[in-house]
Amino acid sequence: MLILASASLRRQQLLNESGYAYRTAVSDKDEHIQDKQTPAENAVRLASAKAEDVHQRFPDDVILAADTIVAIDGILLGKPADAEDAVRMLTYLSGKRHEVCTGVCIKKGTKVHTDSEKTSIDFYNLDRKDIEAYVETGEPMDKAGAYGIQGKGARLVERFTGDYFNVVGLPVAKVARMLEYFHIYPDGKRPQFQRSDTGSWKPEE
Ligand SMILES: Cc1cn([C@H]2C[C@H](O)[C@@H](COP(=O)(O)OP(=O)(O)OP(=O)(O)O)O2)c(=O)[nH]c1=O
Image (cartoon, rainbow, N blue to C red; front, side):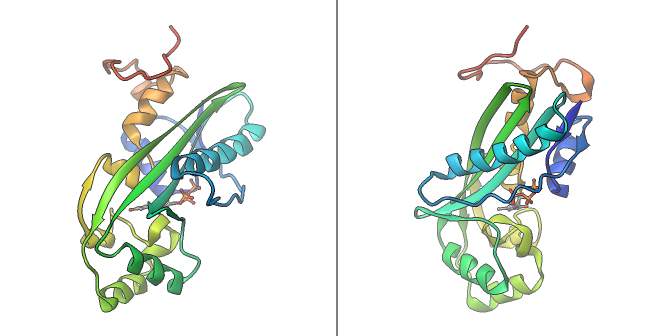
C-alpha cells in the first residue's frame, strides 16, 4: 500500500487527481532548514525525515514524502512564522526571480529513492499595500515563501518556468516515474510512459 506522509491537502489532492490509491499518515518530525545546505539538499533531507518517521510506523508499506522550499539569492525560505514574517518574505520576493524546490523521498524497507525538482518563478513588483492585503487573507501562512500560486497568490506571479505542480508541493510527473520503481502505478495499471529520462535508476522488471 502507498502511504502519503503528509498533512497537506494539496499534496493529497494532486495524488488523488493523478489516479493513485493511498492512505495518509502524518509525520510529526520537526526538522529545520539548514543554511549550509543547498535548496535541493534541504528539501530532500526534510522529505526523507518525514518518510523515515512514517516508515517506523508502517514498515511494510511504500512511504511517499515531500518538502517544498523557496530559494532566492542564496536565502532559503520555509513557511512564515507570522504575518510580519510573511510581509518580509513577500517584500524580498517582489520584482525578482526565485526558485521553488520540492524534495521527494519514497521509501520501502531498505529501498529508498530521493529526487528533487526546481521551478523558476518571476514575481511582479508588489507594493506594500498589495503585500499587506494579501497577507491579511491568511493564505500565505502555511506556504513556503508565503504565497500560494494556486490561490490568490497567482496574482503575484508574472511567469514561471518548470513544473507548476512542483510549486504547489508535489512534482507529480517526477513522482509517478519514481513510484514505478516501487511497482506503484496510477489506476493500478502499468502506465504508458516512455522511459527516456530514467537518469541513474531504472524500475525493476
Ligand atoms: C510556493 C508554494 C508553496 N506551497 C506549499 C506547498 C507545501 O505544502 C508548503 C510548504 O510546506 P511543507 O513543509 O513542504 O509541507 P506541509 O507542511 O504543507 O505538509 P507536510 O509536511 O505534512 O507534507 O507550501 C503552495 O501550496 N503553493 C505555493 O505556491
